[in-house]
Length: 390
Ligand code: PLP
Image (cartoon, rainbow, N blue to C red; front, side, top):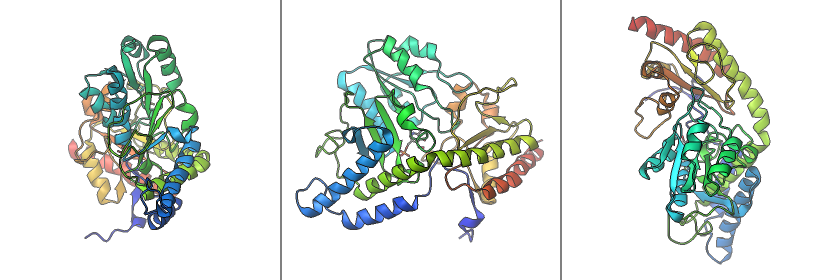
């Protein structure tokens, strides 16, 4: 058993999951203690549970600029994405489509339904000509994430909506805003979307609670049938404590977001600049063109994603882990296996370069000391690996 403590660790994997905010933990414990009645029941204890769920629904609605009746609590970001795609498709059998850089929680449902996968440019932005080519009257839903979980690239949903309005006015626009919510004013930037997915554990809330915002005009079919909870869209007894924590985390995140973005963005910039100063051939994904020069693409403030030519990220992650630095390569997945990144492949990165990618993701608890430590360890580990592999 390792004797390492949290103070010896540098956690740079906030895009995979975050610690819970104290406010969220407190709300969770209190709801678990007081809200044990089944929220669908009629007696006092049931009403206590229902009130907790309703209060959290109000908090999320406020954070999203939505009506409370548009907030559908479910079991994860993955479930929210699945409900959006399958729910739109099964309403009237229409076609589905998504961008090639989506999380597998969107990509796999779209592929399962034989949908279209729309390519992206080397800077990670969706190819709007390809979108125009698939947009027609038979389209039920298009899913384009607001911020990417590997590169942090932000998509311009207003432009995408404009194209749908012109070529596929009946199609719903779904956005996976799971990685965007901690960093961006999602209420504003995702306003063009009809369906919006969130996940609690990416912003200081609990694991195993997600939300799908379903705008009142959007017609989708439930995928989980039973007791008719969540306005008949997601049956199943509510996770009252988890929902309370989700609401508390969403509330505090919205209040503090601007300040966090400023602080974390400065730390991210120092980390990336510091690494590139020592290793000038390091490539910051999406920002550095593969043929030289830079793009002005927008990325979320917590994302530092770099490709190191000439190394394997698995070897680097192994070394870093032994030194107490936790990061990742492609997005985390259940098996823990590092498959080559479909995101970098879609952006045209050669396999050898993508094989040396490192996703460092920062969050509201990242400190200057974390960045100092990362800068004193990561470039040296890369250099060591290069010496070993020549
Ligand atoms: N969508 C994106 C962009 C993600 O990054 C993740 C998690 O990594 C998910 C969906 C899935 O969310 P959850 O872990 O709550 O199932």
